[in-house]
Image (cartoon, rainbow, N blue to C red; front, side, top):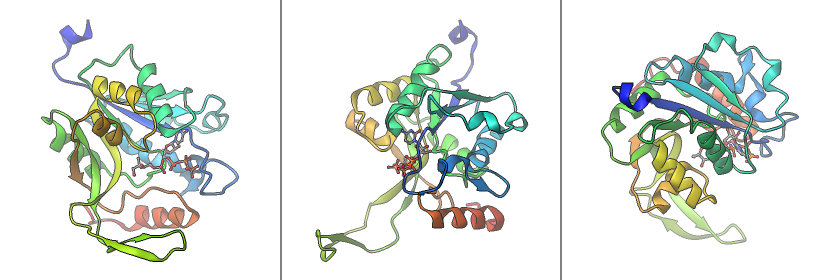
Length: 239
Ligand SMILES: Nc1ccn([C@@H]2O[C@H](COP(=O)(O)OP(=O)(O)OP(=O)(O)O)[C@@H](O)[C@H]2O)c(=O)n1
Ligand SMILES: C[C@](O)(CO)[C@H](O)COP(=O)(O)O
């Protein structure tokens, strides 16, 4: 029925947030660690919920998550919907989210998958990604060109070669693909660390949309300090 009524593809955000944050080594999963007075995940959710392009924001939580209910998310508005269907891996969590929204997503709707662990997502990241991919047949992802010289190491941490960095990019999120394409790709390739890898495994070529280094992933304790600094100081960084 909605297919007959709608005039444009919808954009859904899926935010995998069912990880344990083992590399962070904190007492609670990193998505709930305090960052500038809010749970870390709140920062990206507030940008996604405020984005005019995005129709709904689904947060994929672990089945036994007890922390979500301890916080007040009402300020983020009606677009935000928690789904308690996380899996053993990030790919499982994203696929669980895709299955859970099957009743409302049309095949051609766009899905933007964004890590809960990337709190410095900015409105211009979402805007640039959606604009540049609006007419793309496959979809794509935010990414930044590799800037450092790259070394490959042996098991003793000695350099065995210098790897040419031309044409190498670091993948970020959001990663944006059509609902049906992403679901099929993830059903067929579960051992992947991002959505683009699944799409690539299906024989397609995601487009790289240049982002910037402020959209870092919080993985280790130092990253939390970097994220705090970025959120407080990046006025004027917009590309
Ligand atoms: N089973 C999992 C594993 C990860 N994630 C989410 O995927 C994102 C990126 O993963 P990562 O940074 O690796 O998070 P963790 O798995 O929590 O961290 P670690 O690998 O250090 O345990 C995070 O938002 C995380 O919550 C998820 O939803 N479900
Ligand atoms: C999706 C991602 O953030 C792109 O850089 C990354 O692949 C997630 O990595 P992890 O292996 O879950 O830490």
